[in-house]
Amino acid sequence: MTRKRIVLVNALVVSLIAGCAYALLTDAEKWPFSPYPMYSYIDGDPSVSRLELVGVPDDSFSGETRLSIMKQFKPWDDARLMKSLRRFLEGPGGNAAVSKALGELLDVYEAGRSTGRHDGVRLRGLRLYRLTWRNVGPRTFRAGSPDKRELVGQFQRAASFSPTRVPDGLPSPMGLF
Amino acid sequence: MNLGVCRALIFTAYLIRYLAVPLNVSEFALMSSEFWKPLPVLGFFVPPLATAFWLRAFETAWFVALALSALGLFTRLSTALAFLLGAYLLWIPHNFGKLHHNDMITVLVTGVLMFSRCGEAWSLDRFFENHRRKKSGRPPETVAPSGEFTWPVRLVWLALATVFFAAGVSKLRHSGLAWITSDNLALMLIKANYMAYIDYPPLLPLGVPLGRLPWACHIIAAATMATELGFPLVLVSRRVRRVLVPVMFFVLIGIMLLFLPSFPELIACFVFFVPWENLKLRSRVAAA
Image (cartoon, rainbow over all chains, first blue to last red; front, top):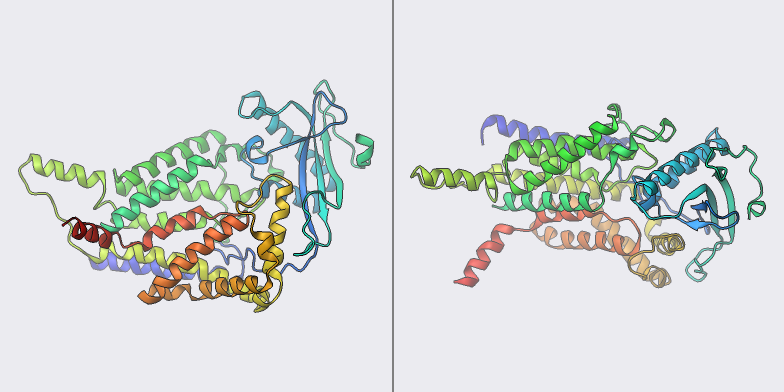
C-alpha cells in the first residue's frame, strides 16, 4: 500500500469513529450516524395507543374499509405515516392540519387506484382513529379489540368528488355511522 | 478474493432488498411541505430535495450502479455512484415522519467499498482484463495478497461495531440496568403483538408466551446488552468474534421474528465476517 492510501484508510477510520462518537455523545441523530436509541427507553406504560387509518367508500354512508398503508399509500409505510399524523395531531394546527393531511393522502390513494397500482375501492373520505388498549401485561393479553376507539381526524369529499373540508370541530364518531 | 466475494454479495443483497421494497422517493417529492420534517445530514446540512423527475432518474441510476457493483463492472465508478446516489436517496424518506435506523449502515458500507479496490477479484473487470491479456499472449494477472484487500473488511466490522455499541450505550444511558431487571422486555414483546390488530403481526407468535416467562426475558435482555456493549471486541479477538458474531446475528433475526422491525441491511453485512478464502481452500482440500 502506498503512503497516500495508508493516509486515506486512517482518515476513513477516524471519520467513522468520530461520526459515531459525535452522535453518541450528543445523543442526537447525525445521519448517517446515530446513537441507535430504539428500544432503549423503559416503557412502563400499561396501555398501548396507536393510530388507525380507515377509508370511507364512495358508495357507502356508514361503512368503513380497512386500508393497507404499504400497498395503497406508497411511498409511505405504516410507522412513518402514523408518526407524521401524530405530529399533526399534537401540533398547533390540530384537527385542521390532520384534515388537510388526510385530504392529501386521499389524493395519493385515489391516484394509485386510478393508475392501477392497487385495487382498493373508490373512497370519498379517510378517518383517523386512536385505538387504546388498557391494562396491557403478560397475563392480560387481548389484542382483539381495543378498549377505546376514538375518532381524531377525518377528511370527506361530497359524493360528486368536489373537495369539502370537514370543519375543525369534529362531530361525534357515532354521528357519522 | 474475500473482498471480491463480499462486494458481490453485499451489492446483490442491497439490490434485491431495494427492488423488493423500492424507496419510491420521487413520490415523496409530490407531497406538500407540511409532511417535510428535515433531518440534517451529519446534524447540520439539509440538501435540497430534487424534483420527482430527477429523483426517478437518480433511483434508476442507483439500481444500475448497484447491479454493476455486484457484477464488478466499471467497479470504481459504479461503487462511487452507488454510494453517492444511495446516500442521497436513502436520506430522503427519513425527512417524512420517522427516521428508520435500518439503512444508515448501507451508506457507511458503500462508502467504505467506494474507496477500496473491491473490483480486483470476483469481478467482470478482472475477467475482461484477463481475457485481454490472454488474447495478447500475456499471462493472467495475479493479485498478490495485500492490506489493500483487508482494510475494507475490517472497516465494515468497525462500522458494525459502532452500530451495536451505540445501541448498547443508549440502553445503559436511558434505562440503566433496569433495562435488564425490569419487565421492560416482557412488555415490549407483548406490546408488539397489539400491532396484529392492524395489519402487521410479528412473524413468529412467540412474543406473548415468551413475555410470560420473566426469567427468560431477563436472560435475553442481559445477553442482548452484553453482546452490544462487547461487540467492539470482535475487532481484536478471534475468540470473541466466534461467539459474538453469531449471537448478534441471531439477535437481529430474533428482533425480526418477534418484533416488527427488520434490519435486512444490517443482517446482510454479516457476509463480511465469513472467511470466504478459507471456505474455498477447504472445498479444494475436500475435493482432493
